[in-house]
Length: 388
View 1 (cartoon, rainbow, N blue to C red):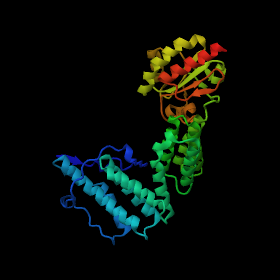
View 2 (cartoon, rainbow, N blue to C red):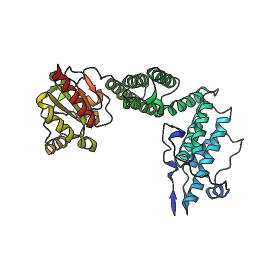
View 3 (cartoon, rainbow, N blue to C red):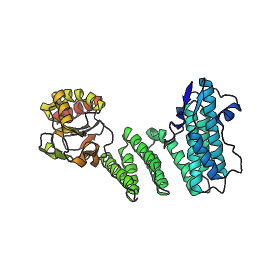
View 4 (cartoon, rainbow, N blue to C red):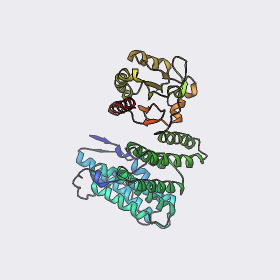
């Protein structure tokens, strides 16, 4: 027997990116049957139903629990529920008397239902989602039109690696304009964060900085403490994106209690690693850093760790066990431990490991100095140094 309640999976997803080219081959569609409707006891929906009543039906449908004897039956029941949600949402969206906020809620529920269908192999669902978003862009209700534009914009995220500078600038400007037209919610925040990180991945740091900076300024104008906190994170990320080719500010106390300022290391190549004892990827990177440290230290290579642990003892334990010879910055203030480490906050570090490489002139040359990238950058920097 299958106990099925996974309709809730993904319901809280905030960004919907439907790209038919990225979706695998769909499963054969089952013939329409009436049995699932009766088994699930779905509410009757008619064209005269009021938007508020239809929203209640949608909310109820997402909470439905059902059992199935076979995978085939499970799929039939799931499709019936999702189809019921889509039917109710369509009536709300098409109702000219439904206000913008209500229609937007319906749009998001329909998009979510289509998203679940697409992940189960229904390729038509993705196409329906894209078509709906494109149509919504021209809706007379401003909020609904904005919703359609945001969905269409999100669907273009896969194009970022192929965009030229002019296209990137327009993409970010259009996105910020859409954010400005309505209330910024967790969904907009996630779209901005994903967009920024995608630009970062393809080393388009100027565009990444733009999206983080502009979104942060919008968030800082709100009254919500949570959104203001996110603004701080985004300002930091924008600051980090602006580092390539410029000096990095890094100060603090080491685990040994000594003062540290990265400016004192100007003239040397410096790797700054943000890490924590609970980050397996950070620990896996340590042997390579150690190898490069011993290879280039005599030529002027230094490493500075920024521990994002909550416990200094735990950080020291890792340093001792792995025999790390370089200094580790650690904040001892109760309100500045872990991810609240001042240097991490200043640069909006929300994901580790993060390795930043600084050249002999004191300027950042890489925001992703890990693995082979670190090895190649060090070889380049020290070869260039010898040739001068």
